[in-house]
Amino acid sequence: MSEPTTPRTGRFVTRWPAAIAISAAAAIAVAVIVLAFLWPVVTAEAKDVPLGLVGPEQATSQVESALDEHADGVFDTTTYDTRDEAVDAIEQRKLYGAVVVGTEPEVIVASAASPAVATMLRSLAGTLQAQVSAQLAAAGQDPTSVTVAVTDVVPLVDEDPNGSGLVAIGFPIVLGGMLGGILISLLVAGVARRLTALAVYAVAAGTLVTLIAHTWFGILPGDFLALATGLSLAMLGTASFIVGMNALIGPPGIAVGAILTMLVGNPISAAAMPAQFLVGPWGQIGQYFVPGAAATLIRDLSYFPAADMTQPWLVLGAWAIAGVLLSALGHWRNREVVHIDALEEELPASGA
Image 1 (cartoon, helix red, strand yellow):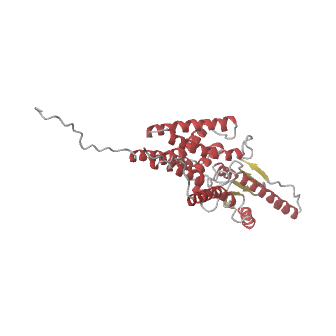
Image 2 (cartoon, helix red, strand yellow):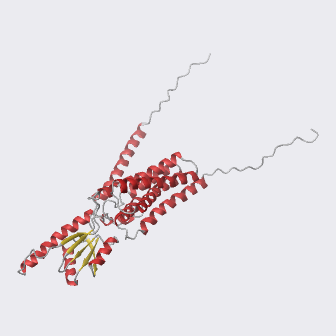
Image 3 (spheres, one colour):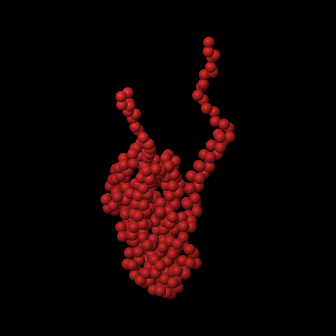
């Protein structure tokens, strides 16, 4: 008669050191996430904002001196001969605004470039108005005879007067690219099928988002086809890279793609503020990640069609192509190579 055996419950108890280590690692991960998102905001500082100056040399020199005295390091000034040249530079996103001095003083802003900078320049207009009025009063003239005009040459649309919608759409683009990449990585097998699924997903998602943001809500003005193409490429860049990393190193590749996009690229994307506001070179570095390039491209397509968009197009295209190459490399590395030395069937000897 066999001896009775103790039934196995199947329960697994984690060792105490491991449980504590896991808890500590999770807490550290949360701290890193919070730091990644709050650090750019807390350390943001207005500096080196490109600003145009138009007017007689003596007058522009006085404005430069005043800016250096009262707003040292905030503006990076460039002198232009005419107002039209300064406006062209603003529309090409070389400047955030301009100050015209002379008999008809004016402060030119572009709310669509940055509402924060536009607010700064409107405040500067108030300061300039006070100085002009004081000079007129000192000369015995009517201090109200000259008014400093404020002109918004690239205003935000009425449907998005504060630019909050333009900023808010950046996160769904990032999340959408991640979601597409993760789902295709987990649910679609075969390199050709994955690449086809990526293309279909990007076009469909970009078109749907454009229909919502451009046609329905109206927060993204501009050409529909150009916006749809830009949004599609933005989501393709993230999704393709995640799929490629998954093909190359397996499930950990999904985490690598998500971390690079969400915790590295997104906080330094400068979607909510000018790149110059971020500490050190991080604002410029952020433009080489998908979130930063996408934010710049969508803003330019919506409001600044005259701007040079070569860099964001190339950056997004490079991430998409990198994902395709990684998928191909992963497929090649993971192929099972079966070596068959000999499959010879022994034949019975003749006459056997």
